[in-house]
Image (cartoon, rainbow, N blue to C red; front, side, top):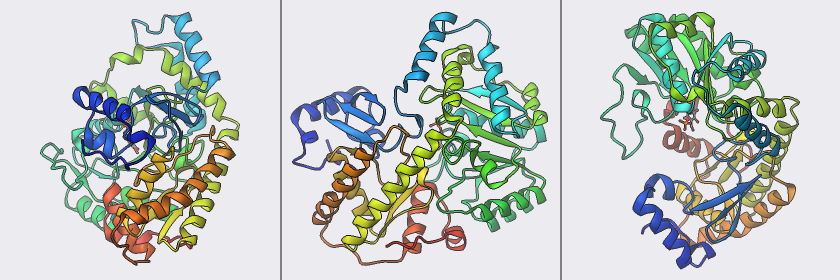
Length: 436
Ligand SMILES: Cc1ncc(COP(=O)(O)O)c(C=O)c1O
C-alpha cells in the first residue's frame, strides 16, 4: 500500500493498515479517499471530533467537507430530524411535502433572489440542474464555467493526470480569466456563466466585473454557492458583496450534514424546468428537509457563524506565527470561515498536513480550512502547538527546501492546481497576504 502515512505514528499501526487494506479491497480509492484525504477508516464523529478504528481521536477542521457547520451530530438538528422521520414515516409517495414548501419559503427569505427553489441531494446535482435550466430557458447550449462544480461530465475539470474523455463540448472552462470569458462569449452565444467564488483569490471587484461582462453578453449568471452559501455569510457570497445572480446553487451546510441541495433564483428561469425533466426520487424523503429547517433556525441569529469566524481568525494567526518563527514561506489567509494555506514549496505543504494528521488534526493541503462552530479554543490551541512540531518534522523529511518567498508565485501555482485558475487571472486579481 502506498498511502502517505508518516511512519512511526500511532495511526501507522498494523491494525490501522489492516483496516485500510480491507477498505481498499472493497470500496476505497487510494488516490481520492486516502492520499488526497485522510488515510484512516473512521467510525464516528461528534461536534468537531472524530474517531478512527483505533479509537484515535482527531479534530476536524473541515466541518466534514463543509457539510456540517454546526458540527457533526448537532443535537437540535438530529432531534428534530429523528422526530420528523418517526412522525412522517420519513418518506412520502409524492415529492411535495409541507417541509419542502416551508424550506423554499425560508430560502426566499434568506436569499431575496430565490423566488423559486428546486431540490436535489448533492452539489453536483444542483449545479448540473442549474445548467440544464439555463439551457432550457435560453435555448442555447454553450455554458462557460470556472471552478469546481462537482464530478459530472458536463464540467469535469482538466487537472493533471485526469484525462477528459467525457467533458461536455458545449461547456468551456474560462479558468477565472475574464478576457477568455469575453473571447468565448464573443465567438458564440452563451446560455450561462457559472462560477464558484474563490473568495481568497478573487475579490468582490472581480465578481462585479464578471457580472458586468456576463450581462453585456446577454447570458445568465449562476453563482455556485455550494461552498459559500452558509459559510461565507448567512445569505451567501452574492448577498454579502451585492451581486445579483439569476440562479444560485446551495448544498453544504444546508441540512448540517444530511444530503440536500438546491437551485434557487428567478422564477421564470426555474419555470424552464417544465420544458425538461429533473424529477428525483429522494425529494420524497422528508428527513433532510426537516434537518434543513432546524439548521437554518440554528444559523439564523449569526452566533454559529461568528464562532466559526473567531476560530478561523485564531487559526490564521496561530499558523502564520508558526510559519514566521521557522521562516517558512507559507501563508494562512483571507476569509476566516473558509481560509486557505499556501506553501511556496507545495511538497512541504503536503508533508506538513500529513504530520498534522498524524498528530490528530484533520486538514489537507489544498483542502480549505472550514472550521465548524463546534471547534473549541482548546482544539485551536492544541492544533497550533502541534503545528509548531509538525513543521520541523515535515522539513526534516525533505532533502532541500527551495527558498522561493513570493506569495504571488505560490498563489498562482496553488490556484492552478486546486481550482484550475489561469495564472493571468490570479496575477491580475490576487491580493497577496502580508505574512510570510
Ligand atoms: C462549489 C462546489 N460546487 C459543487 C460541489 C459538488 O458537491 P457534491 O460533492 O455534493 O456533489 C462542491 C463540492 O465540494 C463545491 O465545493
